[in-house]
Length: 290
Picture (cartoon, rainbow, N blue to C red):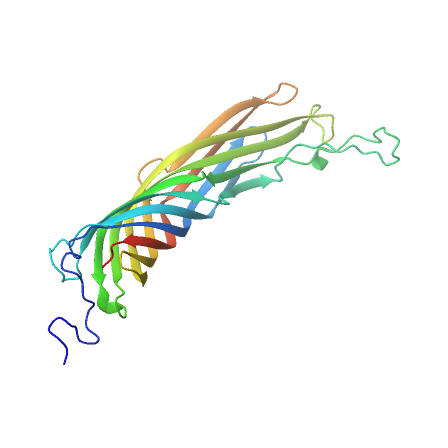
């Protein structure tokens, strides 16, 4: 017969009397992919417009700190809800994407037609043969960003076996990052209005950075993977949606000149969709999880 202080097989794990009142801090590492759609266009005085749209997927890693409060109800029950607060920093990788392109933009290169290889041009180079003519717009999420969250953590030990605990954690999420848009124009034009060189050329580049703030809902499922007397290792999966608070559009323009002094202008605009999404998995080391 089990003692009064024991517990029957299959019942919820025992907790020390003061364990429920503990604050539960944790540090963690996450791996995530951000999904952001948008459209872009560029116009210039020298080339046809470039328009495009697409989905930008950005892989990232993050470091975060989180703390869970003592249970809000003061005792175990009703999912043992705790207040959660977390914040962290992220580092993105491979985040440059071309959203709009016209022609074959690049560094202007004018080939010399020298069929007999005597070092002298045999004929005038056609403008159509000049490489690098075109317009493009690229977006790039800057490497460092910040994140934070405020919500509730419901502890459901009966969803896992043994002493493990599952936490369901709805939250309100904040995100801050910087986005750079780059517009490029490469063009060559005949100086005598013919389809042949001699020609004037230009390489024009403009880059603009903007800080973006976003807020939205999140949902996380976390489970103890291993437990010790003072700490637990937990695994989690998370989905977070963010709505941009301001600054959805990035517009810029510049005036330049061909190499012979003729004027040229370039304008660009990138507009991101209101919502972006983050899919993440991670691991945390949580202190005093009993």
